[in-house]
Length: 248
Image 1 (cartoon, one colour):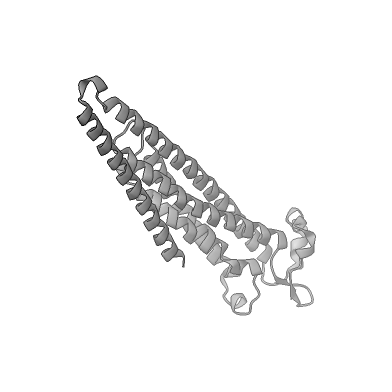
Image 2: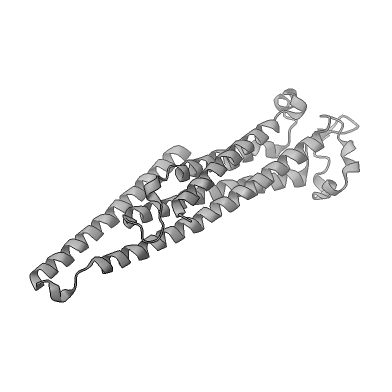
């Protein structure tokens, strides 16, 4: 399948997963739809790490829009034309995918830590603490102990459900971005091989041209190749500069 078309499919999928991550993270701030726990700082500390908003959300939307922005003529099927431009485009999408891998990985790690530690809640004595922090996540296998949290009501179910969603979505995003890294690298290599094959096929035989024309032909080909490399390098620098502006 065309590498560019595959990247666009991945991009559209990542947009939906990123939106779901943002929604799940926002819901963690409002147990049972109430806002007072956020104001009183009675939420799990890992809620404030913005795993779904930043890691699984914004840092995924950035590469997603890059993948979607790949135009139809950037489709890098083997033996296509304009392979130098396509190769540069596909390899630059790898850089965006690496950003997505970092963001989704961050989301997975924070969600796993949030699940292991458990929610911050009020016990039977009215003391707010991390009731299940010492269980190393074993409370997840013993729902009968969840009643130790008296307030907010059903906070354990709330945290477990939403952090599990973030963990699953982050894992899917990580896999999709990893697929795009492989897709972009293979697309770039494929285009590189095809471009050399086309040059070899299009090159006239040495006996059919005069020496002067032969050297002119080689010089022109070398200049075109050099300009292509300079253009690719300039595009990569521009994309890195744009990513830095977005992130910082």
